[in-house]
Length: 445
Image (cartoon, rainbow, N blue to C red; front, side):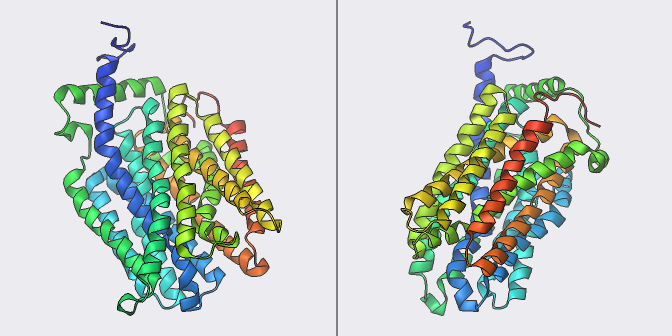
């Protein structure tokens, strides 16, 4: 037997068998979960493209749009923790089915919005239904992957949001351009309907396709199930003692530190998510099709950054600088974008390159961040903790787009808001460097 085939210390199977088992799991889980995340992302952010026509048709202001885009995250805030607790109780496939069908229906109903109040209510409900999906998948993947394989799995799954940007921009541009006037509907109305239908269908598929736990997987052999069980048990021993009581989460300073870090990062991410079409328009591109293709190209690089940074973090066993370096890159790109938009006469490619740098850096930090909670939490505390961190942090998704709308209304520009967001994202990197220990393995009270 070659050295490559030998079992790792503490393992019960050769390295090749462990790797092949996890390759099988990844091919089974990640493409489907990624496809669902693409649909969720499309239904969440298509409002940024609909805005290009919707505001004029309905006579909504930039502030109305900013509040509607952000109020989505209030639904997140109120329903993420209950959803993750429910997932632990009833299983992932029932939870994912409910969530996916719900957000698809709400997405379609947005086509009939006529007043700001209707807009706000449906955006809140969209967030309420989607609330449990992202933290639910993060928790779900911990049932399958040991910590040294999670950043890559998280990065592969989360890169679907970038893939959604790659597909969503051109798709939105095409729908809004070619479907405008069909059956007397505006292009933005068709956008909501045609992007909501696949989510409803995918929710039905989830019931038949998903498996709640490794021991229930008929597509794994008995030996492969033993490999997964042993890898997870070995990982739990290596991690050492961690807090497993969710009732202590609210008094755990490390949890609040993680919330502050992710809040700062999501200020940047949500700003880019909901304002990229507007930023591209300010550089001189005005047609939905052109804006969609440019946004798609930027998200393509974002997807590559998420996967490569997550993979390198796993390979090196290092989290702090993989997160902080990416966040600093994102903050730098945001700052350059603000400067470029404020200087008349610059070539168009300058702000677009800065926007791409901001997007790649910000998105590349996200999958690495989700390694941090597992350093401190396990069991029930991990289930509730992931949802708690994500739900409170996503209040940034409410505040940042709304603040950008108010700033755009007051100044006529997005650049002043970008300066503020760049500083906030830089703060995320500083918090990790200063307050997160290099290899925390002990229980944190």
